[in-house]
Image 1 (cartoon, rainbow, N blue to C red):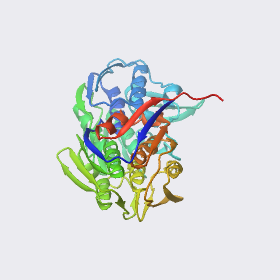
Image 2: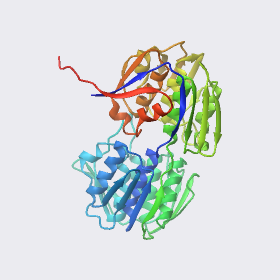
Image 3: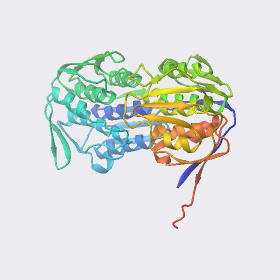
Image 4: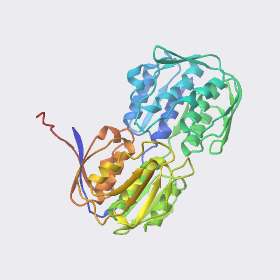
Length: 422
């Protein structure tokens, strides 16, 4: 069993370049299926979710090659339209293939996706968007089957869902006619997807706003694109410095995409200076409480940053309130933080963090991706050694968490533990 061993209570000092964004590269990889040429993607992180996505593309008949951070996909001659259950179960975002496979092949067949258990995340918005474009979708023997020739339409999302916006965009690019997506998600990853689709020749505009317009039915050629940096990974490393003290720098990321997170860290007593693709943070020995943090769709405070910022605020003064508006089960890390001495009270969607003078190293286990990163952040600020297991969750979103934290001056190593059968 792989574990991180973290020696905490050591001020950090260092600099790290942020990897490519998980939430951007996955829909972009799915979009390559719409291209009749060769797509070259740079800054593709080595993540388990990315590798599973590449496996899906290979299963569908695409030629896929990886050379370091560069991935090449040739989808000129696809051979399938069905994704097996074994691949679908690996990650929730696998549902993003529903739209592009349907648009390219006229039929798409897959099972319900897997991923972190964060409470109900129904895909009904994905299905209703595709139905608006003319898809006939049914369930046969536990599998979703979508068929039909797609035609442009007006799509209004009841919730600004990132996944549903992406699926609608990809299907609409293949649909004949004009599609308008209203109440679209505004995340930077949506803009990155639009930029890639434009590189392939798609006629699409409006990403970053609540209305996206697509003139579909245009054949897509190949293209080259660099995936934007992962703002949540950047938030994790900034939170790590805030938890441990000292100073650090993250590079390669647009500071504007992190303004709600850096504002909270500044309110907690950190000095934050932002420049072109650089954020520098200097943290005090102990943070102070902040005003209530409410997660919200972009440009609000990101739900994916909630856990790591909470971990940093555990060893502080006063009480900080978190209100989780996005998912029902996003406080699974709280019980593990309590094992380290944190004082957190949860009721429904509200968590109140009562700052404590110190945290203590303990054996803890990651229950999901961002919660696992939060435990690593807490371990850096805790006295003694923290042993963190459940690393498969962390590998879904962090290319080299231990290596990046060491670049910031942390003492953290990856080890294999022998598990006793007694």
